[in-house]
Image (cartoon, rainbow, N blue to C red; front, side, top):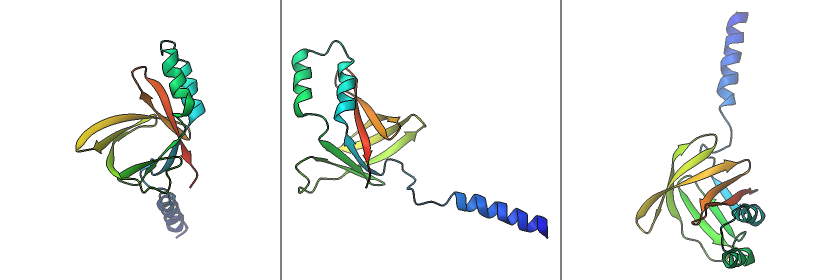
Length: 140
């Protein structure tokens, strides 16, 4: 009898450990472009022309928020929060401890992006110079 209660307790603990409020898709939520992290990555690349760096430093990064649901994403720029953003389909093709491979569809064309995990942020390699554009989770 004691062994049966103990076994049931262990089974219940394992069952309840799997129950939480987190979505199965860890991208769900809002992610804001992180200007300082992105510019630090950009400055680490030596062959980006000075005029390109100057343009990107001004007011390019740090303004975009991407919001993911289970199967759609939308993007809003700072100052345009009152505009209802379009939603686009996506799906996670692969997820590891280090990255996501995400299939997006835009204007009828499907393409894959690799999003690298970095603590409470993710980044993707951007531009012809492949520096990191960071997006960090927004506390909803």
